[in-house]
Image (cartoon, rainbow, N blue to C red; front, top):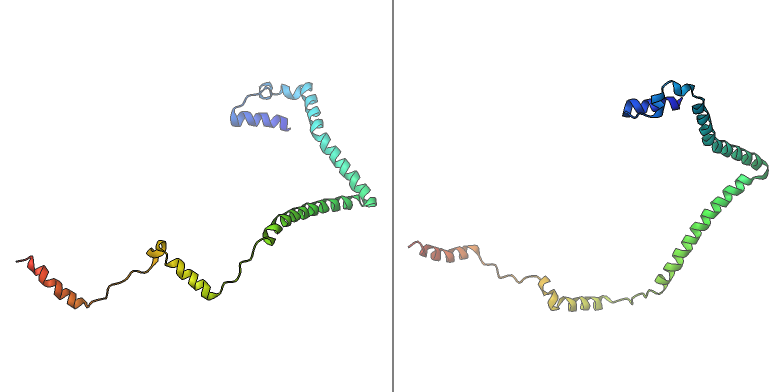
Length: 155
């Protein structure tokens, strides 16, 4: 049925002409077409049918032997072996890094303060020191001192 509908849909939707749309009703009456369709159907369905048959036989014999459980257990154990191998590799490669790392000797707070003070007194860090601020003067005295000079330019 799909072999009749799909070419007609292709023609109506996309304008694709094929031998199937051009032959019309003669395609249905052609015995070569039907033999070809039966052959293709067999080629597509035969592997599926054989797969179903093999699985049915396997599960039927597994009821007595437990082969399906053994197969599932092997699959689970192979994943476990893979994970265990990966973890072992990670541990082996990271263990030398952690075992050879030297732990620094503890530093007393006085030594730490002295070291920080020495570093901060270097010239390359002088720009980080706070700026020295001039003494703050009374704003009233500053205004009175500036007034005579500003009056001088108006004379």
